[in-house]
Length: 421
Image (cartoon, rainbow, N blue to C red; front, side, top):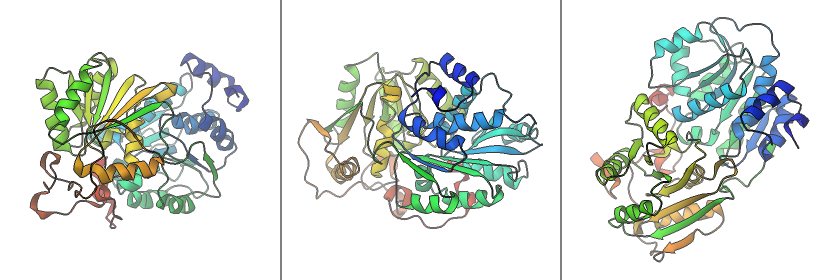
């Protein structure tokens, strides 16, 4: 099936060809026709399989047919994303798809000047890509209105649940038009997702092109059983085997990632880091350097697992295994994108054995052992929130957050999530 069989305008098909996109992916083949017919869509697909085009092309097709400009402060289509990186990536892709049309596409995220965003929204916009926290800030300032919004997209909805944005969604959704088209896309399917679908989607068509939690087919996975003290040496050995390739290294904590990046930098590697303690400008510069190849090693917390769409990422290292098993799928999905092949290498210390078993339950398969032997599973897992990611390093006796521990999150006020985006 080609794009011209999906009902898209010839000009849009020509634009896709200019971008080198000539054949739709499975999620695009199945989702686009239903979306163009006005159906609510619930799409489940592996990360890196083209979900942005699956919802973006129908939106651009519908909105480009309208000849009138949006009213001041109004929005015709709203796309919510959990992280700044993902929101920026979505808006960049949409601008590429919409080349040659009159559509205005605006992105609003935290960490940058809200006054500039207010000035931009004053003119109105066809498509708004936003993180929930910043959008609520703008709504509170009456800088934007959603009563004309006829399209709503929840991208990476599972991470929005994990980050506690469900409360923000409950505040945002009632402000939209009751008669609207809603699309939800995700790579994993936690139990709460069905509740979200029933609350915000109207008789949606469910499209599942891969089992929820399944990793991309072309990602070759392996695990090394190594002590925590042995991880730095093993990482350097792995990086030295492919010095010209880009590598994305994941850790659990902001302090731990920053410490690891500085050590790699001292060791002569071209390294940078992105995490919640970095300003938006620092995060943008790190990703830009990683894209153009001046940065070869990018160390990141899970904030990056949903926002980096760089086809040339050859290696993903789980330097520390995630305590939320679904995050493993999103991490390794940063490689083998757009049909390419990639390597995902995990380091498992004794106190991470339970994390590995949870990951394998989600994958429904064992990860190939590259070195070492499985540890006994009676070692307590590391506590979260400590300095440098040390087991038991939780300061002040504070309990780990619900998002990190995997426990159900207590209800919070929406304003509490603004800085997370």
